[in-house]
Image (cartoon, rainbow, N blue to C red; front, side, top):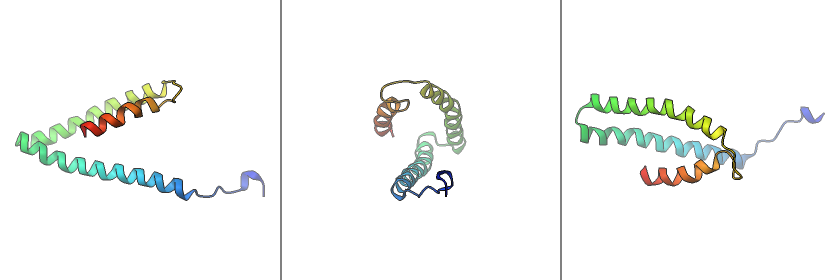
Amino acid sequence: MSESEKKEKLDVKHTFFIGLAFFTTGISWSMYNTQVNVTLFQYLGLFALVGAWMAMDNLIGVIIQPIMGSISDNTRTKFGRRMPYLIVGIPLAAIFF
């Protein structure tokens, strides 16, 4: 069997941590979507305003995510492309979430 025909083994530890990351992201996103609706309804009082607010949140995300993706793709630092944004973004997300 040649080298190209050999099948790579599944790295269970690596797969577990990737799955754990997606699991925690999914849980936090579900909690956000559930609790933000309740909280916004308490402040705004109308479900239509809550829906408009959540829709605006998604539209802003559609605009900002490709822009930040392009910026991070073109970033060159000794820490890498994404690490400066992670170093700043993770603490800010923890504070404001």
